[in-house]
Amino acid sequence: MELYRIIKKALITEKTTIARDEANKYCFAVDRRANKIEIGVAVEKLFKVKVIDVAVMNVPGKKKRIGRIVGEKPTWKKAVVTLAPGSRIEIFEGV
Image (cartoon, rainbow, N blue to C red; front, side, top):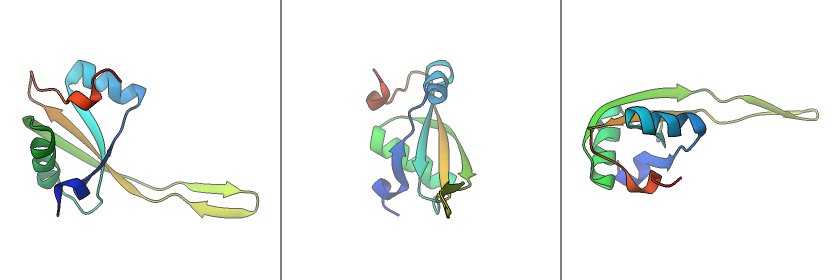
């Protein structure tokens, strides 16, 4: 799988910002078919950093309702990547 298809987007919330500052952990929305090894390699090559650990979780889609119509948000996969001490991803800085 191509590197740019594995990492879909960076997740920037209050919780992920605190994790980044305190524990050097970064969160990404990733392709559902990707495994931990592929995610770690993609982050290392795309951002030129050293990855120590990768944790993944499947986030189930929620049911949403608009009037009488009931729909469902898609299920997606989240990855929490821990970097080596001293490594930083520059696109997250200043956010």
